[in-house]
Image 1: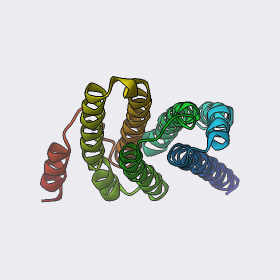
Image 2: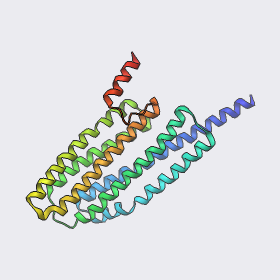
Image 3: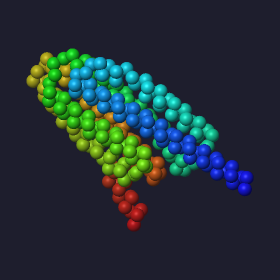
Image 4: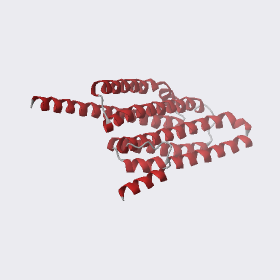
Length: 240
């Protein structure tokens, strides 16, 4: 009976450890979402002070990554998790790495925003990039929601939305290149907008990665180099 009580106690502590990790990932995700929101607001509203704040506050996200990574190391050392529990810890480590890189991309947008706030604006640029930014921010939010619920079906759907973001990025790049060819004086400004768009496209890629980690955690399947069509086919065959 004593051994059973000890086992239940250890199991309960382990569950608390895992829940703590999940909660901290979501807190970090919320901070990253806010960074993206502020970066886009600064960019589209020519708010140089807000852009500067975004560009210089990335250290907070970096600190969270280091702290959570250390906690993951402690969990592995103390609990020696196996199977799905180990996959969850691995997913946390990978997810915080992607969130940290998203923070880096938001910082880049902030730095470009500082420069763009001082030059003449071309409204069409910012209408397009604002729409793209909203799509990317929603994708990240939904990815974190799928992580919180470990919802593989939602993760699969969200991840496929990255194609739309890539299409928007390609369209904006073509528009910017055309403008630069027509007006060489706009090259520097257009390049800064292009780099912001590139950062948004990369954020979409990182959000897609988080969705793939959710599927890996629940199903134990690494789909990074597999088409979604193939994954759906395999799931259908497994259900039959």
